[in-house]
Length: 480
Ligand code: UDP
Image (cartoon, rainbow, N blue to C red):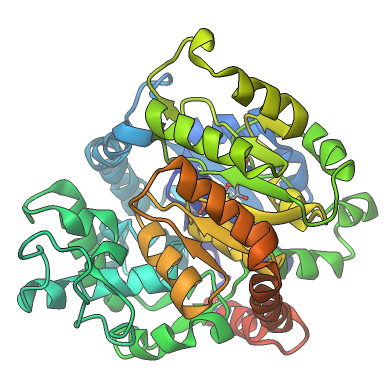
C-alpha cells in the first residue's frame, strides 16, 4: 500500500531561505502533501511578531510548524560580521537535536504519518547523513543562485587545478574551471570567501561539504527558471541529474494561489503575502505614488549585509548628488559603527528632505512592482535579483558575500540588465551609476530586463517550465 507522503521542510534561518521555503510549503499543502515546517525558535518568534503566518497556514490541516534551537541567545544579531556564529551554533546544538528528532520519529507522532522526504537548505549537509541513517529520501532546496551554487560545486576542481586559493592577488584573472563561465568569470566574481589565502577555514569547509553532499541527494530544487540559467544548468545536471527549477518561486506562488478556492478572495487581491522578519513600512508606497514614473532609485542591501560608516556616507553623497529621488532601506544594524548627526553635511540633509525616503524595511516585492521605480541599487542577493528581473527593474550591483559576487557578474555581463560596481565604494561611481540606470542607459537596460521578466512570466504560466517542474516535484514526493 502506498505510504501517505509527508515532507519535512527545513530552511536556513535567514530571510531569503525562510520566504522561499514557506512558499514551497504552501504549494505542497495545496497539492495535498502534508508538511512539517521546521525552523529555529528565533525565526519562528520573529515570523509570529511581524507576519500573519499562523492565520495563513491555519487553513491547511495538513501543515504544522515545529521549532528547534539555533544555540544562540535571543539578543544575538545573527547577521553581518557575526553571521558565522549562526553556523557554529547550529553545528553545536541544532545538528544533534535534529538527528535525535529524526531518529526518534518525533515528527510522525503529531502528524500520524512518518516523514517520507526531507527538504533542507542546500547548506545543511548534516541533514543528508541523518536522512541516510533513517532511510528517508532527501531533496535539497538551494536558495542561492544556480550560478553561485555551480561555483560551489566546482570548488574541489578549482582547488585541484590550483585556481583556488589565488596565486597572487590579481583579481582580474579569468577562471577556467567553472564550465560555462570561462569567458566572463574572473577571480573577483567568485564568492568572496574564495579570496581567502588559507583553505583551512570554516566557510570553505561548509562549501566543500555542500559540494560533496548536494550531488548525493535524491534531487535538487532551485529558485530559477530554465530560460534564465540554462547555460549553467546544462553543466550542473552532469553532477545533479534531478533538478527542479521552480522559480521565480514568489511569482509561481502568486499565480498558483490566485487559482485556489481555499485562499480567501481578500488575500488574492493583495497577494504580497509577507514573510518579513522586520516590520514593513508600507507608507513608502504612498510616497512612491507621488513620484514620477521610473524616476526613483530603490536602495537595499538585504537582510544580512552591512556597510561601514565611510561606505554609508559615500552612498549617501552619491545618491543625493545624482539628483534622483531615492527610497533607501536602512535595516537596523546594517551600518557598522556610528556617527554624530552634526557630522552630516547640510546638503545631504537638504537633498534627502527634498528627494529621499529612508526607512528600516519595506514590502520589497510591492516596491519593485511600483511604476515609480526606475532602478535598484542592490547587494545582489538572489531573491532581490530575481524579484527585480520579474518587475523589469535594472540593477546597480554592490555585492558583499555568499552568491552576490557571482550574481552581479551575471547581471552585468550575461543578462546585461545592470551595472556591477563590486569592489568599489565611491560617491562619484554611485552618482554615475544612478544616472546611467535612470537616464543615460535606461532604454537599453529596461528592454533587456523586460525580455527576461517576460521569459520568467512564461515559465510560471500554464505549461511553463517552472509549473511543469513543480508538478514533477509533487509527483516525485507523492511517490517516494
Ligand atoms: N526584503 C524585503 N524588504 C526589505 C528588504 C528586503 O522584503 O526592505 C526581502 C526581499 O524581497 C528578498 C529578501 O528580503 O526577498 C532578501 O533576500 P536576498 O536573497 O535578496 O538577500 P539576503 O537578505 O539573503 O542577503
